[in-house]
Image (tube, one colour):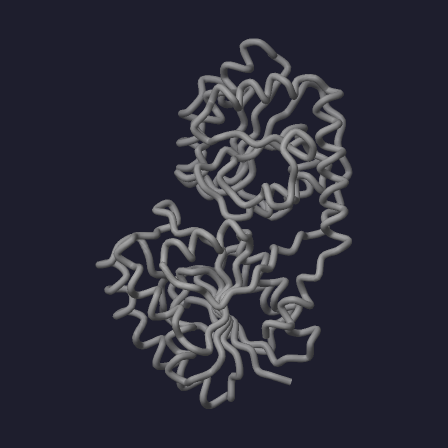
Length: 364
């Protein structure tokens, strides 16, 4: 039995955290002792309770994620010095065998692991893109951290691996492990008209204004349509999204963020992910599993798992005209349901052959 220390940069429950929880489960199944480190300066937004179900112990230290600029990153690393020192003491005292860092912006793990000369696993969920906080000025720092001789990198797609290899100009000690898919129990609800939905953060890279713009034009032709935007974290975000459309409150609904994604997918017919950039968005596979027709950005690695015009539809995030054309075609119920059925079948195949836990156990 080994002692595995998992490090995360938030206390929220997003896609990367769902993957973290599955990795914790894999470690527990293998009989490892599991400790999880979370940042103490941010409020708990749902992750703590889930972690406590699987971790032997839970630690809190003051540290922040790096990124956005070279200057900010250097200041954050200075701020994180205390946490790295305390974490290094813990690693030595508790005989930690492996440090596992979740996301590229989490660096206290690799710095402490290198200080203590223990194995480090770095699970990357982001791309080297400015919308993920990446700046070319950070290349030298990441080359040094990635170059730690006991470092192992997990990439979640070939697309992502290629992007990081090019950005850093170095070969990475990498293993490709696709994200696990949560099993959802969805009982679809009957309703009138066609509901189009989006589920996720309201960040700039999600490109939600384009989706609203396209829907407003579509709604002129098809009155029995609705757009549900789910993901608001506070009243301010609700107001911001409502300001995008004159239809807000009637055909456009802005909903608060929820962990009950099954209920959301049970009530919509089409899921649209218009993001400027994604890595491997789990929400797409969850929507397909729920039997929802999916239209998604071309700017991700999902084409490694799904076929265009068979399992789903892909569109460039800068081409509102193509998205509008695809939504028009999906107003045909038979076509929409054929895509949804194919997508649901494909995700069932992926679930049946998933070996995520075994792959993670092998890396650990």
